[in-house]
Image 1: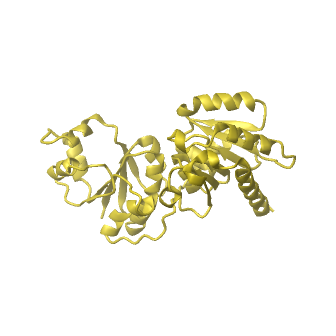
Image 2: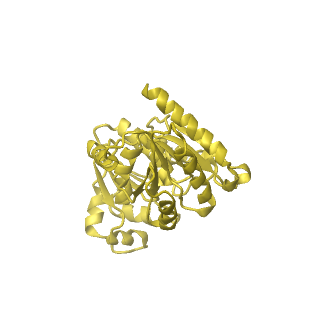
Image 3: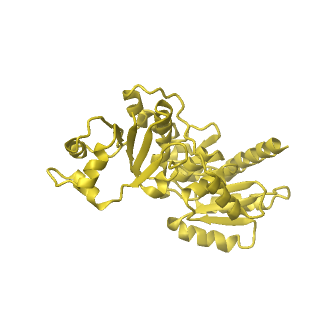
Amino acid sequence: MKRILVIRGGAIGDFILTLPTLKALRDAYPHAHIEILGYKNIAVLAEHRFYAQAVRSIEYGPLASFFAKNSELSADLADYFAGFDLIISYLYDPDGIFEMNLRRCGVENLIQGRGKIDNHGHAAEQLARPIQEIGAPISDFAAKLYPSSEDRHAAAKFLGDDTGTIIAFHPGSGSEKKNWPLENWIDLGNHLLSQKDFGGSIMIICGEADEDQVARLESIWANRRVRFANGLPLPHLAALLENAIFAGHDSGISHLAAAAGANCILLFGPTDPEVWAPRNENVRVIRAPNGKIGGIAVQDVEEAVAAALWAARCASE
């Protein structure tokens, strides 16, 4: 195999859960040109960072013709797809229309990956089935990110003179049902900031969907040892989290933190960690009783963070 294309849409967590498959693909074909067709702001995590040599945006107008029967296909895209020795697609294609149009372009070696994850087995294992079809071995389902030197430089610039332990909070997710109450995050942060021996800082990870939460936290923690990482490029955020303690929910950012190497404390409510939690050894899951995330006690999370801080101190001595 000289040229391989992986078509992977989906959100941040979906992409990161596919990284073990990409690693097995890279290990099996170390000299192949691997390209990803996906959302560029997410797939950039893999571009020139071990996994892939190039990324192309899935948000390209002419690609829409590939999802319609008997459509006139874009000539440049037809040539593009035909130029690969193997294509692995994770696009949801229940009627086989996308596959049929790829075949019309002359694509012969096409494998369809899981477009949707069910509750039978861990998500990373389900996504790895295309690799098993081509006989490539895979046994490690823990995703790993490889920040570049430029990513680490950007992270260092963001941190400035702050060299203490970073405790990162991500109080959001893709669903309110998966979110621990904001008041609990405030109690957790106030507890940390009140500790005389806490020599680090708190970093709140946030994006456009978290504006209301951020405004509340900024009003409470103004002029405290709290910084806000708002809308950072994902590779820079991964570099920031490499040596951090991270607390979050079942979310894409939690998968990013785990894959970057952060010591993670993840709060799970209605979703099943046996399917969705990162497989990394640096992950501790606190599961809500009866699936209601508000039932997780603040004290339980405080104790988990304290244990992670103790481990960080011991490692630095």
